[in-house]
Image (tube, rainbow, N blue to C red; front, top):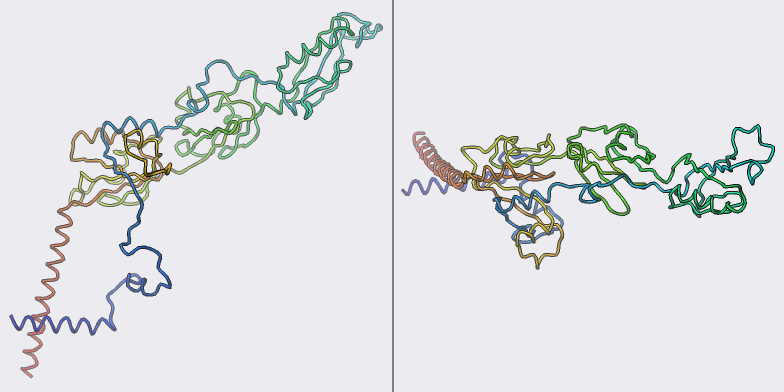
Length: 399
C-alpha cells in the first residue's frame, strides 16, 4: 500500500512539473486563460443568466390556447369580407371628364345652329381633382368632388345648371383613378401601384396583378396595412382559405415577404442543427421526426423541451400570475412527457413557430454512466502509474 501511495505522489509531482511546459491538445484557449487575460469582466459570480422563464407542460388543456395564438388572420383583423366591395369615391388626384347634355339646341352649352352636331351635348376637357377636392364646371363654379360618389357629384352639377341650361343632364367619367389604388411591394414579380376596379378586388387579385409571388408559398407571408392597422397571414393559409381573401380598399399597402422558417434541435436527438419547416403547419411531432427522433440510448422521453417567447396574454389565459412581470414577451419552456402514451397525440397537435429551439435532455442513467466511466478512467490511470513507477524502480536497481 505504501508503495502505491509513493507511486501516486511521484505521478502527481511529475504531472505538475510537466504542466508548466506541456499542454494537452486543445482547439483554443481554456476558460482559465480567457478569464485571466480579460481586461474586465461583466457578469455575476454564479454565472447565472438571470432570465425569468415559465415552464408549461404540454397537455390537452394547453392545446386550445396555443392553436388560437399561432394562426394570424386578415379576416379577424379587417373583417370577414361580407357584403359587396368597398365603394370607390372620387379623390384628390383623380382625372375626370365632364359631359353636359341639353334636351334641345339653343341652350347654355348647345348653340341654336347645332343641327349638324352629333348630339346636344358638350364635353369639357379632362381635369384633375385639385388639392381642395374640387372640380370646375362652367356656370356651376367649383364643385366638391373628393370623398363623394360620381352620382352625387353629377346631381350637384345638374342642380347648379338647372336655371341656366335646358333640362341639363351631366355625365362624369373617371379617366384615371389615382386615389383608388393599392401598393403591392416586396417579393412579387412586378411591385407596383394597382388601380382598383369598381367591381372589387381582393388580396390575391392585386397580388396577381403585380405578377404573383416570386418566392415559394411555404416561405411567403402577406401583410396588409390599412389606416395604421396591420395584419399578417401565411400565403398558403391565405390561398387555401377563401374567407381570408378579403377585399382591399383604396390606400391599402400589401407587403409580400419571404421568410425562411427554421427551428433548432439539440441534445439527445438523432440529428442536431437548424431545420427548415418545409410545410405551412409544422407540428412538434413532425419537428422531432425531422431531427431524427429521440436517441434510444441517451434521451429522457419525459424531458422533451421547446423554448419559445410568447405573448403575455397566453400565460394570463392559462392562469399564470403575471403581476410581477410587466413584459409583453415572456420566455417559456414547453415540456412534453413522451413517457405518457397520450402525449404523442398532444405533440401531433402542438404547432411549431419560427425560431423555436427544441432540446431533448439526457436520461439520468446516462449521466451516471458518464460519472462511472470517469471514475474508472481515473482508477485505471492511478493503477497504471503505480505499475510504471515500480517497473522503473526495478529497472534502475538492475543496472
